Image 1 (cartoon, rainbow, N blue to C red):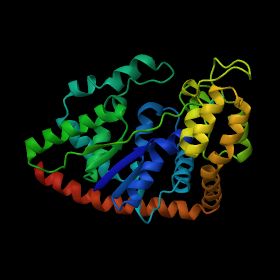
Image 2 (tube, rainbow, N blue to C red):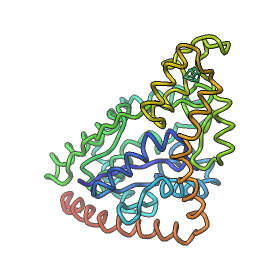
Image 3 (cartoon, protein in one colour):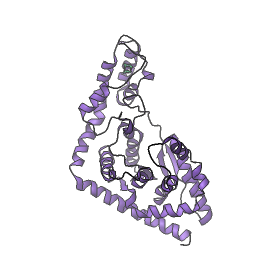
Image 4 (cartoon, rainbow, N blue to C red):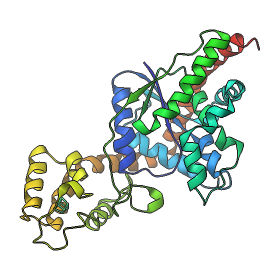
Length: 325
Ligand code: SF4
């Protein structure tokens, strides 16, 4: 299956990205699907057009994290969106057939426009980003897009655009399917959603000392005020990390120990740390190797863009022919 996914270049990634996307991407590439993973720099411009000074370093940091987390350029195509100009041409052409009402009804658009005060989202680029997203997916004729449940409405716009295009000009694109993945919910150290903007993230690039400090300071069950109070793992931010990184036996012991106050939160965090490190230490090590080899990163992106361009040129030829251009 041809698979497409992408991320906006936000710089260094955190545990949420690893568990929510990168682990899944690595599995898909290892199952021999033809995977395209895109650094969506043009999407970053839709909302951050006035702050582009960190764009290049953000792209670099994110690609280093992708590679360190297991993406293998021998098994997948890793590329920067703006390096494949065919995508932008397809965006323009798809814009011709996309009714504005579809974009006005996009729930994320309405929500972000109403809630975001610190960014100017009144531009055409932001309004039309679902069309750009459709062009990203369709330029490689992807058949599958790994998404969480909350992103299904986005993909539905792409599917609607495909149906309209195929109806108007003859069957050109496959209708991409959502490859639904159950993402574990990872909370930040302060109990809110893990996000770099809240400064509550455990980064893949954090040193072991940083991780230790962050876990030690992590907010746990808010009702467990004293060591002798029993806790409730199901309302604790830390427990989901045990459920991901600890063995079944440890999870059981932690649950029992917590609900009977046999263990305190400090003990619980000490039990978690080595288990978390089993995943983070190899990523950290690989990160250092990759960072010391800038030519390798450049090569990965050049190669990825070249491979994606080949597929994209063939798609555009089909599109131009179908539209009588
Ligand atoms: S003992 Fe562990 S699971 Fe229980 S509240 Fe403390 S940190 Fe959370």
